[in-house]
Length: 202
Image (tube, rainbow, N blue to C red; front, side):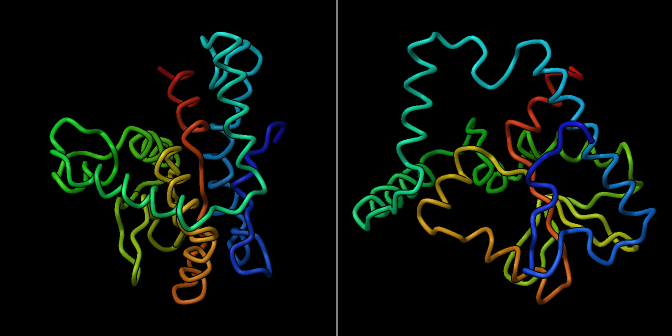
């Protein structure tokens, strides 16, 4: 496809991509779902949109600078402690009205917005999608039952980055665990990618 999603072909076990061992039909149907997201991203790009649309030049620069300053730098133990405390403080507040993933699950409310978008994209190509399916120590956001046996994750910008800062490599180890113990490939899509789909289709 012209505008590939970089996360869709991530290697899970060091030996091959997520589609290793899939039938040609299954691989093509998964690719069709990914293509819809890619097409949406391409439309956003051509129309001049993007995650920073509407930001002032100064704000855009500050956001980019803050993000780039963290690249390639290890997180100190002191910073990890601060992040952990902030997360605990957030999770202990009244969850009613909060739309973050952990609070939505705690209160039994519906999926987060990006999880809903992911589910809708998959249901447009596959007859059954299971939400919050547990495999061993972990749950996946969306699961395609056999004959597909594929997992999808909607990586929210805030929580995904926070967990990765606290425990670098945690998501790669998680994906490796699911592949090793359940032969389960995991396809990850970022919040920006999923929101672009909603913006185009909405």
